Image (cartoon, rainbow, N blue to C red; front, side, top):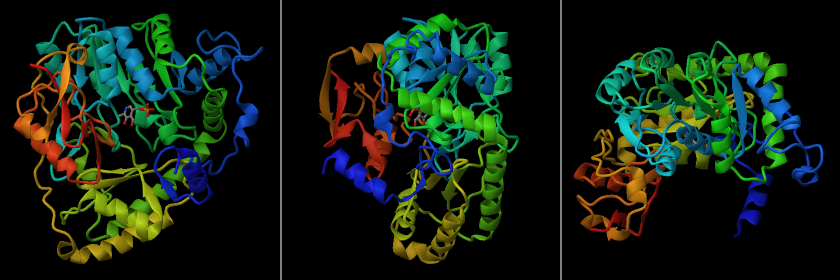
Length: 470
Ligand SMILES: Cc1ncc(COP(=O)(O)O)c(C=O)c1O
């Protein structure tokens, strides 16, 4: 079946959406009803995103006002395009940048395009769950001491699972050393509009912040925004890099979706976020009665670099049993018609937004799963106990490796060879291996572990991996 037929039939009978995009099939608001009627290009009066001077400039100015930034730009190629543009703006060939190694692969696009050299900082892993936490101010302080000539610092906050780092303190340290702080807030576009959710990096001193509206707000897939909050970044330079990373035919429907999202926040944000918070609170309180399943996050606060948590991210895991994430995801899908966002080795994740009306369907499913798990050991044996932390051995910069000669190698023969590409479990899209990194025994065993699950591993096909030629 081709994509059109498949999508059309899915749209007629979709599963309950606990995944991106945040508009949840347009639940609770109206948007352009028949998209083809509005699918225009830069006709008279409609401005040009490559050089906005009319309605698009006005819309970006309104966006900046709502998000309380110095300058904001529309992105129609997702946060991916914004992250790569931000990297290209602050570092160039051979220059160093301190980067969190739990970054999305778009960081590496920026590194390959710019030729900059990463100095990695590593988030701690939450024991038992294999989920990465935050980056501490101490991590950044130490990295700056070890890599004083780095021009900028790049971190991800919140993580896919909703954990934030202490951006305010990190920003102070970064600025004391005269460097630029870029925060990938792709999963936190809804931050800063309600006291029940974490503060946005925009208000905590980050110089550049990138947010995917489509992930957690009522906006269409691919829509994202990039903000500047200080004089350390030249808006014209950033804009010129954004222009290189985006289509010159941006969809007016996507751009209108960004504007409509901003309008919803302006007009009804407070009320919608409060209702959303109340529903989440109810779900979380009721689920405290579960025996085998947990949605709890409070034990993690203040540990593993974790500063705060987004309660809209529903992390589902077991505290007392060895339950694989794909088991949870599949159970909810098959039995309750619930489509989750993703699963990891030992957890699954429901993504919610102000467009979810209530969570009674999730709650009911969790209670049934909880009963089923009483006998879990008898149902499925697993071996997911081994913890992991990705600390690559680096042979060359991502750019040098990217432009080197490569060959395909069987995984079983790849030990100690240099990776020619990315190996990325998806989701969450954090590479286990990047171009130029050594394929160590530890990484190999991790790759095998992921291949053993139902999580898609991009970069390995028929057990073959790209490596640099000798
Ligand atoms: C942490 C993080 N940053 C950036 C991105 C890229 O965002 P987008 O899909 O809007 O391009 C993702 C995508 O999943 C992500 O998880």
